[in-house]
Image 1 (cartoon, helix red, strand yellow):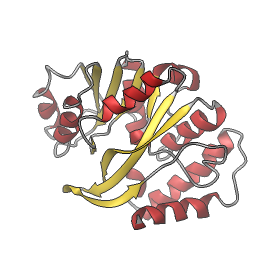
Image 2 (spheres, helix red, strand yellow):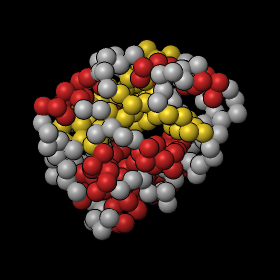
Image 3 (spheres, one colour):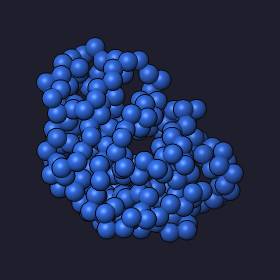
Length: 249
């Protein structure tokens, strides 16, 4: 079974190398690696070029943002399973993809597999700032303030064909809206793997400013309404509590 890994990047010369190498060092033998670049001008493309023999496809052109780049990547994948690793992120070790694919191979009915994630300092991947430990999906998973860590989520390509891709009308929470659609509306079978899969550097667009945090939360509320789901009154307090506990763990 082939897995396609997508890395999206724009002007990220300082971290793209570690992202690429964390994919290329994976033990699983059947990986298609695709990089979608937004037209970088800072040397990112030169770093990518250094690995051209091991990367199956590189597309570099202007896009409408990270979710547009992800959608482009998904459209170019030929693997039965698709994972997305952003240019700031790395896999925890060389066995991550093998572990994920073992789960899919163990149960052919699985539509998605996900695990845990930690946020680390920008300049030190070993310095954990926040631990995002998930759990098995259940009926009120999202209502209780949960959401799978998107970088740790691996999805069968046939699921994308049925569910669709990221909603480009959302600038900050398109991943949340997509997962809400994926889990609550379509209810594909999932498996949670209780291990650390991804290290993610701090500094994503959603958390870069108070304004973005507020707008991101407004988009989350909009995601429920757009999918004709009733917004739980306790959703935001529970989401805040979940986030606080991630710093304490």
